[in-house]
Each structure stands twice: as structure tokens, then as C-alpha cells.
View 1 (cartoon, rainbow, N blue to C red):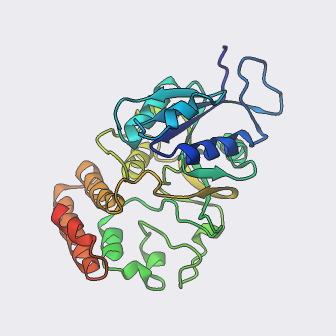
View 2: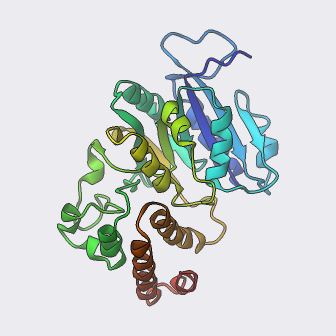
Length: 310
């Protein structure tokens, strides 16, 4: 089969058989995409390949995915983690654009082709994301600004929940419109520093330049670190959040324990500082995050384990 893909969609699966199949069905419904690469693509469609990496699922994911036409399946013998599995897909991707799409997402309307059309028309940008929605169609947060001492401190102490604070200090995690401050951050197109791996549409040129995810991350936090390396590689280039394209993100479908995402978010922030900030800031951030976990443990006991990990 001759592969003349313009877009490569990479999906990592782990014990999410039906959810992954539902995701694929929604991708195939995007009428702006063309998946039959054995023929000349329709002039009005985007030639597209789909690469699915299964991270040693213990359900029937691999058996069912083998039945799906027009995908390339990689079945790992171990759970290699989110970043490393995506890098496997990136290494064989033929497209000029890479879409990293979580398995626990449902693509609405023509969100993928809309996003690609936007990115191809904006050469000043290297990455964009769609508007993420919860299952009940409310807006879900995606990404934010790079970690700094200031925004880690305001987030850890809950100061970013106060009115106007996020206007003074760019937040690590901006609020959605349903928060009491009624922030409009996710209601309009805008630039931001990083986006979550649920939907990351990236130019292949910068993917090759920055070598993909840091594989020392297992899950959570790797998007922030990679986005920062993209920023260092192309400081004038931009990452955009778009409200036109929309997807539903179920969230947490691959988490093994409820505590895991929390611990990995904390350790991801520390890892970012270890790689990209002075050592004295790393030491201070560890103390700040430990205080944060301690305070939260009075409300949620799972944070006691976080304290012991920090």
C-alpha cells in the first residue's frame, strides 16, 4: 500500500477496548478525512493514516483492534507508558502533521479536519488543540501556562481560585467557565503554552526537531515538558486553543488507581523544574507541593500518600 498520508493520527490504548473502538468510530466519521491510502485521495479530503499502540492490555483490545480496517496496530508486550508509546507511533508516522489523540475521546463533527485546516493556514503556529468537553458537554480544562515558582505557589495554596489572581499571574491550570469566577478563558480562541495529550495536533517538522516525548515520564506531565522544548526550539512559534473543533474527553480511563494521576501530576511538575529551572527553584517547589498535599489531605485522605512520595 502506498502511504501518501498528510495526517498521522496516533492513539495509545490500555485496557479500554470498547472506549478505543468508540473513539475510532468517531474518527472515521470525520468526513474531511480520507483513510484509503491505496488509492488517490479525493481532492477535497485529507489523506490520513491511523496508528494504534496497545500497551499490553489485559482485556480483548488487541483481538478487537485487529478486526478494524485502515489502521496500523502495534501490540506492545509491556505497558511502556504514554510518552514512549506515542513515540513508537511517531517513529513510523508518514504524515506532515501528527495528531496525538487519547483513546478515551469522541471526536465531534469534523474536529480533526477543522483543526488541521486551521493549523495548515497558520504557519506561525506549530501546535493546536480542540475544545475539550466532559461527557455532559460542559467545558473541560486543557493545558495552560508553563510552571513557574509564582503559578505553582498560587496553585498549591489555592490562591489561583481567588478573583483576579489568574489575571496577574498566568495560571498553571486556568479555570473553566463553570467555576465561580466565570472565567472566559476556554470560550474563545487564544494562545497558551501547553495543551494536554488528549488532543495535540503538531507539525511533524517540530516533532522531528524535538524528538518527541521524554520517555522517562510514564504518564502525566510529559506534555508540559515537551511543549517547553518546542518553545525553546521555536520561541516565536505558537500553540493555540481552538473553540470551533470539539471533542468529548472521558478522562482517566487508563488510570490504574485513583491516586496515580495525582501523584504523577506532582512528580511531573518536579521533573519539569529539575530539567528546566535552577536547582534552588526545584528544592523550593518540592517543599511547596508537599505543603499543598498536606493541606489537601485534611479534605481527601488520598493526599497522605502523595505527601509520602514528595
